[in-house]
Structure formats: structure tokens, C-alpha cells
Length: 496
Ligand code: HEC
Image 1 (cartoon, rainbow, N blue to C red):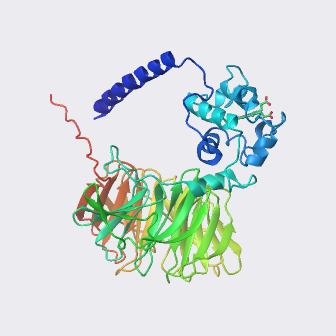
Image 2 (cartoon, rainbow, N blue to C red):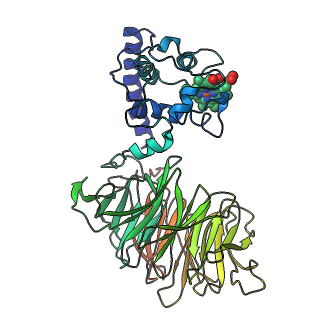
Image 3 (cartoon, rainbow, N blue to C red):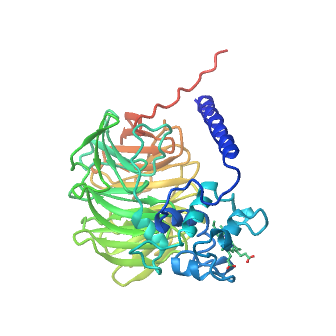
């Protein structure tokens, strides 16, 4: 498979090489504006190039060379050397000099990456020659990152994937019959018993990082596009008018308002964690901006924004009474926040390494956290207890980092499930801390785990797209690669 892929690239390389040689031969090095069709739009054509290549150093925070490029106004105001643009005269513009410079002053700087591509430079040149205008209706003070986000149109997912889709999140439907998996710009829905793909739901988000069902059967998904946007949306995955896509019924969760019901927030980077309160009335989210947000499901309004961690939030869970939130963070701690008094109740530092996820026992007395240290730890979370924040138990068994936890308190006994880098899915009694089962068979890091509401089934999802479903007594139910159209390469068995 690998060899095949490489030979493919080779053909591509030769074709590209020929095309490039032809270009170089036919149109000698002039980068100024030839062959680019106008008129050029600043926001649609120029700003995306600047965002990708320049904003990292020229945003409001860094302002290298005193130049801030994230609004048209500040871009034109220039840095220590004034307006870098002479409208109508690309050849006299400082900006162009820096883009095509062969010297140390080139932008982006030599040590920060390659020069812009010829086509990109030609687009900027043409825009300057056309007068370096701002698009009609766009405010010169408008934040370009935000404007680009608003204008972003998500691509359709691959009809048939050439590579497996890494699984960051999965969930059982409330009846336990289907498994929803986060794909690339879509959610894919599979029969739990057979592994058959039964529906695809297109999404604006490139990735789903966490998902959970509301009591009414609607699905909440948190995710985003790394470094670009993060969102929390509520879907009705069974609604919409399906069209066949790669032989599978698909619905439009990007635009169709009967499928994508609510868009709770849009922020500038991925949302990584999600929780629903026991009564189903509140949703909590957390992510790279370190803010835990709590929303009211009925109104869609944000009720709390809590900043209590020094780094990304990787896990959130409500206390059973809905008055508190436990959180896990890359800052190596887990915490409990009281939503009523708006106070931080405890910090648990016991993992001494990144805390990847968090849960809480059904009685709300103990927090449960899992981390890069390979352990799951329970700690006193009862605010009336003297030992609040102190470790109660360490559940060991995973030989490497534990990535995710899932709980099901709907069956005869409460179950805690975990998954990790050691490619296993494990079941525990969250109260006693006893290990119940360890499931193997997945062949890559297991980033996602889910339990059915009734506690009968558990599923793990791996970095190579594999999903395995088991009964919680350990019996295997199904295994499949949750990547539409992807055919996993056959493992070559060496013959002696
Ligand atoms: C890795 C950081 C980095 C990136 C990426 C970067 N720049 Fe710069 N830029 C700088 C630094 C540092 C200076 C100041 C150089 C100096 O004063 O010697 C600068 C200066 C400039 C200036 C001159 C400002 C003035 O008035 O002095 C312009 C114009 C500029 N950059 C444009 C760009 C453009 C366009 C891009 C993207 C294609 C870009 N830069 C990408 C770091 C960066």
C-alpha cells in the first residue's frame, strides 16, 4: 500500500515538474500580475494568503516590525516604515519588495518558511495595481480573522476516503443501536451490531472532538478547525432529506436547519470537551481558549464563562446536582468549579502530567481524572468533606497515557470506561475503583470511548479509523473501519 501510494506521487511529481518547467520556460520570472484574472477581492483572495503566511507574526499581539495586518486599516497604516503599499503601483510597494526579495529582509522571514508561491505573489501584485481597495461593505476596522471565518465555506467530505479518518469522538445513539463517529467534515453513523454505514451528516466543523446525546435524542457535537474556529452545535441526525453520497444516504448538517438545529458558539480555535448535565438542561464546553462555557439548552444562551485553568481544557463533566463542573486541563491539574458561588473549590495536582479527561461518581462525591501518566485517579470532590481535593484511589492497568473516560450510570451497576495509548479499552467500577475488564483488538492509539446509556455496550475508536464494539461483559460485537469507502491495506504476511 505504502509503495503504491509513493508511486502515485511519483507520477504526480513528474507531471508537476513538467508543468513547472513549461511555466518557467514560457513565462520568464516576472511575478507581476500576468495571467491573474481580476478584479481581485481583498477579503476573498488576498486576506487568506496573509492569514496563512503573515498573521502569526503580524497580529495585534506580536506586531513584528510594529505592523499589525489583521485589519485593513492597521495593515495600511504600516509599521515602522509606514504604509507598505503604493496603490496602483505594485512595483513601488514595500510589500512587494519584501515578498520577492532574495535577501534577509524577505517576508515571511527566511527561517520562518518558504517564500509565497508565484501565483500568490501575482494575486497580491494585481490587487495593488487595481488600487489596493477594500471590498464594498467591509469595514476597514473589521477583524479579518473573524471576517474570513464568517465567509468560510466547508468542503464536502470525501465521497470515498483514501486514508483512514482519525477518530476523536464517538457516541452510541440513546437506543444503543447505532454508533456516531466524527469524520472529516462529517459525522458518520454505523449500525453497532453489523458495522454497516447507514448515514452521513455533513458538518461545518472539520473535526468532532466530543459528542453527547441530549435526553430528547438530539446530538451535541463540539469541534472545529484547528487554529481557525471552534463550535458547539446541536443536530437532529435523523432529520433532513437524504441524498445518496458514495452509495450512502447523506444529509446536510451545514445548512439544513432541520438537521443543524443550534449553533451555540463560534470561537477562534477548537472546542475539545463537552458535557451535558444530568437533567439535560445545560451543556458545558471547554477548549483551547481555556474558557469553560455553560449554555442553557432551551434558550441556547451562554450562562457562564469560567476561566480557571492555565492551559487548554481537555475534559469537562457536571456534578450530579448540576451546580458544579469538574475540569481536566493540559496545565496538569483537574479542578472543581462551583457555578453558584462562582468559586474554585479544589485543584487536584496528583497526575503531575497532562490531565486528558475527567468524570465524576454517580453520587458526586469523587472526581475521576485520567492522564498522560497512565493512571485514573479518584479524588474527594464533596465540598463538605475535610479532605476535599485529596486523592482517594489510583486505578492502574493502562501501560501508557489514558486519553478518554466515559460513564454510564443507567444500568444495574455504574460503569466507567477508559481508553488509551496502550490500544486497550478498560472498564472499571467508578466507586470501588476495581478493574472489571480489559478489551484488546484495536491496532492503534484509542482516542475515543463510549458507553451505551443502559451500560450494555462499549465502543472504542482509534487513530487509524478502527472501531470495535463489545458488550460490557467483554463479548465482541463488531469491528469496522469507520472511514467511508476506505479499504484498509492488507497486512503482508511474510512467507519463509
Ligand atoms: C516569523 C515572523 C514573521 C512572519 C511569518 C512574517 N513577518 Fe513580516 N516582519 C517580521 C519581522 C521580525 C519584521 C521586522 C523586520 C525588521 O524590522 O527588520 C517584519 C516586518 C515586515 C514588514 C515591514 C514593516 C515595517 O513597517 O517595518 C512588512 C511589510 C512585513 N513584515 C510583511 C509581511 C508579510 C506580507 C508577511 C507574510 C507574507 C510577513 N511579513 C510574515 C516577522 C514576520
